[in-house]
Length: 285
Image (tube, one colour):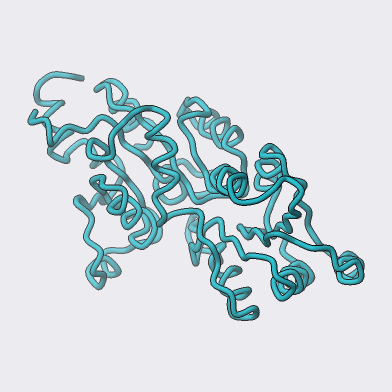
């Protein structure tokens, strides 16, 4: 295989690519096993910030996709890593999000907190404590008072930080509101523009590829979102493959100016793209 066509690593998104909620998508396990037999590294990069990277690795293992923690990067870990470089440990982090984000921020040395109830909000408002950043991810137990506290902190000078801007979250049979929906609400209310941590910023890809010493030019990024996964892969300098099992449909692809290198009806079709098919034809598997 020509050197410039070589693929040393495939980086997968999770929601809509590997699984939908707790439902493992057909062909995911077989495709990962095939790539590993070919000697191709397999990594997972997700805008999910509800879990820690350790819990995501365990979740994949329970689905039959065994992987190490260092093969998974998610937006909670990436956010904590970025904020560690931007803020002091005594800067307070108001979180609109779930346990995984709180744990990753705590591991980075911060003392994150949430405001859940009206009583919590009134206490927070009276104390007028300085907040360094309002950090937003998906929160499936969201309350109005969380948003009120976020706006209070933003108008007092806190920075708005978005773990991602995904407008929706794919689950089996439908889509639900995503992190971006909450971020846009707070942007509209406060007049701020959020600092984006997750995709389409390629920083998470650079974290995992740098750790495993894989150049972007020999990497294939596989995702289900044109505006997040595919754009991030292109900004990274990698090749990209859109899989049609998640958010993006063929109609949406036809309307978009974003063009992936490959389009897959399902994940197992990855075996047919030229760089991988050539390896299979040469008997490397």
